[in-house]
Image (cartoon, rainbow, N blue to C red; front, side, top):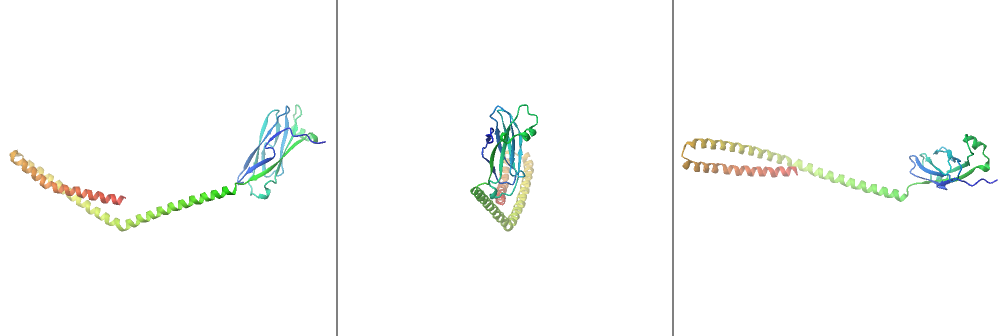
Length: 245
């Protein structure tokens, strides 16, 4: 007597696809739907039980409901010859009313009461052009990184050669200018002290005759030194700017 037609609806119906690379667990989902008004027992079997982990691999689907079965392919070394070698079978059986022992129901079931559906396993590796594109992208990225590093190294070498040849001279010039600025500051301080002393001495004298002459003397003595001080500060700033750049 021929077996009954499968009452469960499978999604997918014919193939379970697993996409690599297969260096880690790859999971696909098999949906089992029960459109009938009776509960249905099911089992999921495979020709390669050591290669797959199926959860749940058996159970009962209530009337009008569905269940998702996770099929987990364990890591392995991909072999193109095994591309569609493995197979799965979904076996089902109408559950009797008030069922208490599912295993007993399977043992007592007659062959004509069993229903089954078969599915193939398909292994898919990433497309070769995708791999080539990834390799080209990696090459471009590596090339740009190498160019960036070489330009950085060349700029560093230029900076080091500049330091070796000119920094000593610039530093010596800076020290000399600092000493000159310090000397001019000291002279300027002395001039101010002398001016203060002169102003105190001439305070008792008539302001009509002494004030213009003292002011002119201060201007004549201080103006050249102040101009020299400003010029030295300007030169010192230019040299320091070149050193920093």
